[in-house]
Image (cartoon, rainbow, N blue to C red; front, side):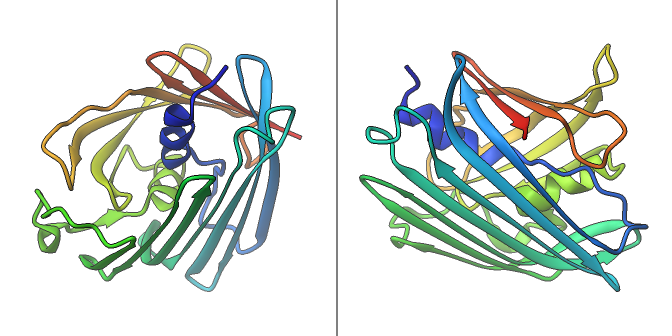
Length: 223
């Protein structure tokens, strides 16, 4: 049976879209989320690119036989601009709710991070100089940039900063590794995420995503 700890960790790191900036359209996809063969949730993602501006939104909701025990829901909204084939975050909002807590993150960007707010308010002092974070992106935008052709993307999710590095697997799948991981609000650098795999055919959207932790794998399958 999966644990709440791994459930909370996995949501931060995954994304669904492969996108090319030559498109100016709306895209959407629905996925089933499972672990150890057990369905735990539904995931939806929409993306709009128009005249150099983009908006992407994720919704996640618990589902399946364990729903009465493990209730969770999340929504993630990122808006920004596309410049020189790079997606650049301008506004990011994250909402995450379980039985025990609700967490809200809001970030504003130009080419630097200019504001980070969290509810509940973080009481720890930041171990990172947030004003120095240049060309960092929210997690959704970082994944889009890598899948759109970038080899790496510097990322901030409100709790951590890290760099995503792109590698190609033996079967042509895309493998993402987490490098230079730093916890903003704590001294430790623990990170149980090992890698993320994207399996792509002829569509813009991956048909499968695997998120590998030290002790568990989450699978996202297109439906």
